[in-house]
Amino acid sequence: MDRRRMLLVAAAVVAALGTALVFLYVRGADNRAQEKFETTDVLVATVQIERGERIADAAAAGKLARQAVPQGQVLPGALVTTEGVDQKLALTVIYPGEQIVPQKLGDTAVDEPRLQIPDEGDMAMSINLTDPARVAGFVNPGSEVAIFINGSDPTTGQPYSRVLLTRVKVIAVGSTTPVTTTTTTNGQGGEAGQQVVESLPRTLITLSVSQVQMQRVLLGQQQGELSFALLTEDSKVTLAPPTTSDSLFQ
Image (cartoon, rainbow, N blue to C red; front, side, top):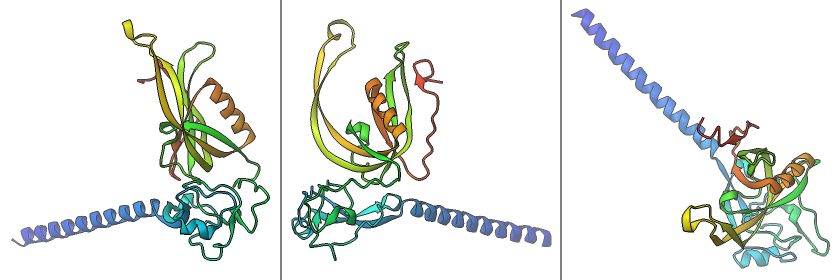
């Protein structure tokens, strides 16, 4: 009887210990998830602010709002309120979604300012992409993206898809403009060779890149279609071999 009682007590202790461990694991997972997606409120343009426009006027017109931004995407010096800068002028056009930083504000808008490039030695370049290709609605100034290319081998004509650049920073997002494109169908019978006209919204995205990266992007635009993949701090992107028709299902 004593042995059975001891076994029951031991089983109860093990069950309680297991429950406690599960609770601690779930609690730790929640904390890790919260840290990963922790955000900071910063001042963001909701409507385009024109060059020379006073910040106080922009705020009165409802062009500014505090929005939650992932901590890894907060620009250096990003403002939280208009306090102290309400009489400043926008030195350049501030597009919707851009964070308000002191570098873009001043007492006079006579001189055109330089675009703020975060990494020393880098340069700014712009790419015009459709909404699906730019992860529409989620890529903002401060975001980091990988660039993929879909194209055809100029020697063999075989289609491929591969990573062009593993990680670059977005420094500006321009306005969206509808662009009309015409494509030819590849169907069989009477549907083959028909032309289809589509109106696709395209947006100008400005990136901070090195010289070598810019050369790759320029050539990539000629050889195929570019697409963005939005990254987090934990995203892993490598220059893996291209995916072709032969390796698509491997």
